[in-house]
Image 1 (cartoon, helix red, strand yellow):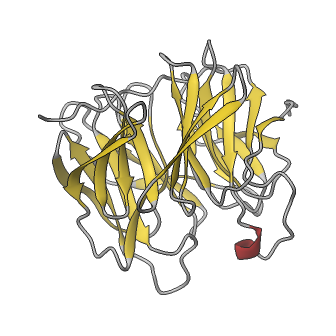
Image 2 (cartoon, rainbow, N blue to C red):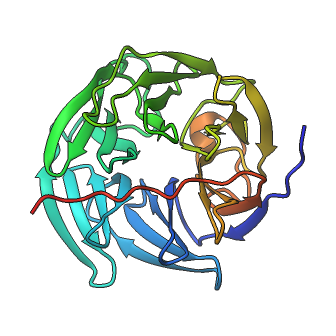
Length: 297
């Protein structure tokens, strides 16, 4: 098994659930969010400085926008955010009861549609909350249902050619895959891709250019890679209990950035000093730049 050096590149003074790391090729920076902290962040690896913008409600995920800025899926709906102007513009209301449900993990497919899932309001839902989530697809400003009655929206990513959609269910510790028509976004029947190893539960994920699926495993303290046929490849050990999501970045897209959260109290574990930090590790794989979302006027 290969060994990789994991470096802590940024430890914030306070962050609850670091999530959704997304690399901007143009800016050579990493955008990310703190879900419970209701904040949007920009980390510059060159200077190791971080900018923070407060958000009015919990952000679940975001995508880079073709027009500039980002589109955030927040508890009350979709918003366009322009960081340079600190301007937040609502695009669409949330299609669910905000007192019970919120948006969570999401990203664009290779054609630029924003796929995002919902889940019960709690960060880690308890028993009896199964089937309350939905996987949505936002094409411009038209929102449709992709997969109904899911549990927790996590681990969403797409094959390099855009013909398969992957997602995870942490309560089942399974990864799922669906064939997808890249032109229409229509999904085929969902099937099990693989199970997660050990004690870890699958959280956020990313895809490398070779079709390898990289998943963060909170509780397991690892980021693991699966081959395109679903075989466990190797694990990268992190210095925290709850890594939350990996993302490729850097000048040649071969730096794996990893966000983390302060989730120990929810997992029945002892806290670690670096919880909530951002980590980086150089790997012999390259990522795929995120396709930007195009908003309808």
